[in-house]
Image 1 (spheres, rainbow, N blue to C red):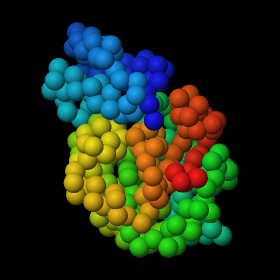
Image 2: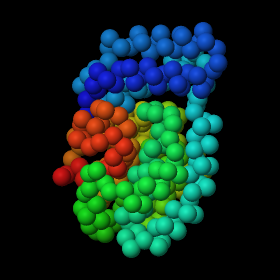
Image 3: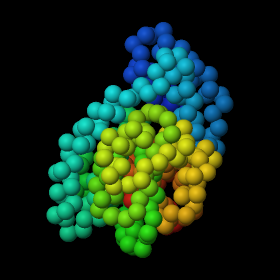
Length: 281
């Protein structure tokens, strides 16, 4: 997926929000915005937005010395999701279709995204997910693929939703590798965040080797790429991973909430829509 002009003001908005999380020094915040703005003339419109987002977060660390400005927010979002774990787990276990219910819960968790918006009601989203239809519904293809699969690669996204990804992985009950970002960027999950969510008890956790808020394949490690190319099913969470992998062939299923007009236009789905999309369809 390419970068659209609408993405450019979003990069600046993200930079301002992240900068304020890193420091309350207005002079430093202005320097960060200046540094990010200086990259605007060179933003390639033919590359995915996460490629450019790397440039947004570099100046924050350089100017403030803070490498993980969302650390506290990530911790809060994980704890919030953990408070809903038992209730959502119970909903799955009592469902007539546990896999569909668990997938809906995982998708609803994608609302925890400080990159695209900072205000959300997780409890409301999770409650709605138990009844809300999918805006793009390739569930039957997903179910059949999961049934046949021996190995699953699960591409994580935001830290808080890893708790809800855990429920889906537990429901699938197959050998799963859970890939996270190599370094802190926005509120995307790292190895530390995934462990705090308890994912290490249900999946093998690894870094993709990528330092962007999405899975940019030419920035991933050889070890990750070997798994990516051989996995029977790839579950890709979130907009960032969709933006990077939308043109990739293979058994990729995109699970996400639609949160911006660019994705609305790209997928033809409404804002707020729950997506379970087979990349092959």
